[in-house]
Amino acid sequence: MSEGALSDKMRQWSQPILLPSARFLGRLGLTPNMLTILGMFAYMAGALILALGHPNWCAVILIVFSPLDVLDGTLARDSGLESKFGAFLDATVDRYEEFFVYVGLLYYLLAHLHQGPLAAVLVVTALSGSFFVSYTRAKAEALGFECSVGILTRFERIVLFIFAIVTGWIEPVLLVISILTFITTFQRMAVVARQAKTR
Image (cartoon, rainbow, N blue to C red):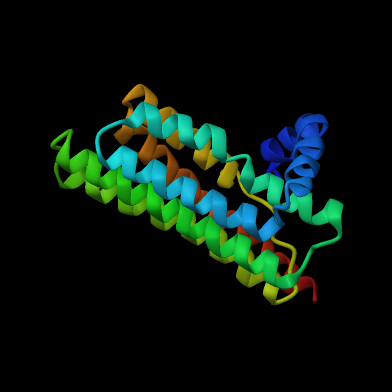
């Protein structure tokens, strides 16, 4: 499965909504980088609300504001404001966003659901797997390789995260995220290894 197979389709299906929305935000004076930072603060708020024991409200915030992860890039391309710094900022903020919500989840599990060490290990493993997925692509592309493959990209991870906190099936979903992110990492390593051989 190609990188973002599902997320790419979602972008295509949502273009009639995304582009007008991005242009509207641009007319309000918002820049792509401002949308990126706004998204980060939204994730911080969602993580805090989750830590306070309100998973459903956290889910609402993530559902409402996660489109900013796409709108910032859409606005950048449409307005001609694409930049290397913008891409760097976006990728860095994406990692912080995941870090915030997983820390909020860890606190929620320990303080409100009184879960034990296994839950903490699953949170750390899922977060680490997510970071490995992102790192392998960033490092590969920095070295000139194509590395857009994987069965669990950021979009799918966020969907699974929201599903977990809404349904309460947190530990099983964290296990799924952990397994699939590590599979995705090895997929990317294999793809880069094949490209290196052909060179």
